[in-house]
Image 1 (tube, rainbow, N blue to C red):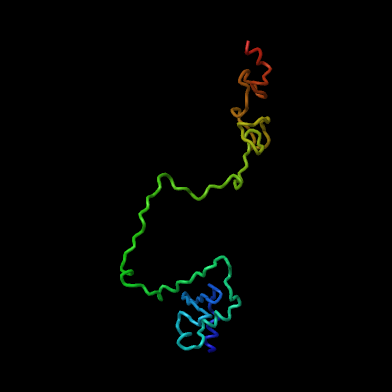
Image 2: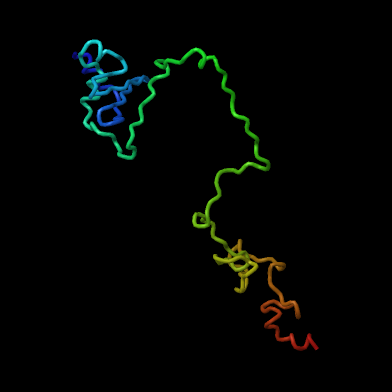
Length: 179
C-alpha cells in the first residue's frame, strides 16, 4: 500500500468528469472512474483494493472538471499500446489525401494590419516624419549635417520660370509666361 501511495505522487491527474479522471505517468495513461470503482489497469476491479492510479485520482484536490465548457465528458483514448484494433482495420492502408498546390508564390506568414504597422514615413526632402517627398510643401534642408545634403535634382522648381522656392500656381512670372 505504501508503494502505491508513493507512486501516485509522480502522476498527473486531469479530471474528465465529476467522477472520471485521466491519470498519466511516464507516457502511459489510465482512466479511473471513482463512482463505479473501475480503472483501466484492472487492479482496482480484481483486487478490490485501490491501485496507485485510483489513489492519485482520489487524492486530487480538484474533484471537478477544470472547466465547465463541455457539458458532455470527453473520454480519453488511452495509450496506443492498450488499443484493441481488429485485424481487418489494422491491415487497411490509408493514403494521404490528394491535394493540389495553389498557384503563385506562397505567402510568407501573415500580413500585418494597418494598426500593427510601425513604420513611420519620413520625407527625404525636408526630413520630417508623417509625409513623403511627393507631398512635401516644406523648404528642403540643405547642409544640416553630413547626411542632410540635398542634391540639386531633388529641389522643387517652378515649371514656368524654373526657379527654386515656389511652384507654378504661386509663380510671380506666371502672367508674363501666359501672354
